[in-house]
Image (spheres, one colour):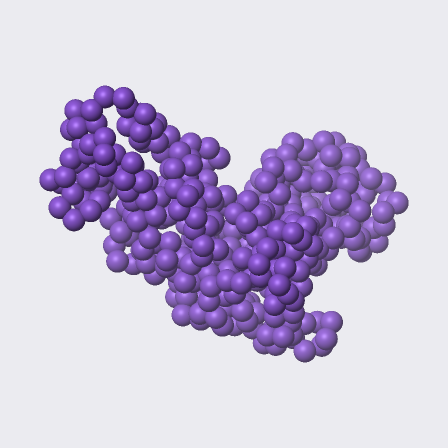
Length: 412
């Protein structure tokens, strides 16, 4: 299908939803050929990975980073609690989703110094130019690992939380358009962009500003002057060369200073996801593929229409009616927390809940008293285990308590 001329030359003539479906079809075909499936009764044995809570990054690096393209194989995650006990959960995908969520919460946090957030708009992430100063030579290994793990999330159809800067999404596709440097610089550093625009429109003599073809590099307080061209410190900026200077400053900040980190991330990503698959999408569409709908809102009606019920519940059960009333009454944040509690992902798939696999499922748990049990979840099967509470008010209280507790499979 990717050999079709329209998809190679101008994929955007095909609607976004059709391209999303094509991507999912390609990935699913590759996934089933490697991993097998329950439906075809040929499920292949997975790679068992033991992850201790609190050591997600360290254990992930030890067990997963050397797999390379073998990350396409089925990964079976076993969580080890702080007490040293294996948590009770059989991983058919859900625990890997939980592992990814735990890992991304740490690795994509700007305080961890692997990524920075844009100052101009959207609080979007891009590689931290000072990552070497924070993590030493290991920073390249970390970027490659995160690229592979993002590729694995795309390969498994897992939507994730991080929102990436436009120029970094271009790097992931492998075809950055340098005509976008100044707009991208504006999202990254509005003040620097405004300074360059002042220079561009300055009607006086640019040499009066005492600028040279250098930029200052600041790594956690350690400043260094970097030449933009050979012998740049001795070449002043004039009216004749100021446009070249503006382009070089923008290129340095948007591309050059994050090139090493971005290349490492992309190397890891392309080991798992074929670059040709990503070229089906432009940058905003690629973000939707990675993280779901841009607004992050959950369509409760869509969620309800594709839900399944087990253990004695049916769509006509009064407790199910109460549940959907409760979900509709939740704030957007609480709905996202509920979805994460059940599926380990805060956002639904880009094509909606009809593509969530396994389907969002509600299982009946019988109780005698409201205080007997909290709601729990089996993220491997996207299943919410919901006790038959006596009222809508009690159900809402118990659901909110459960989803905000942050406990794993041992929650009862």
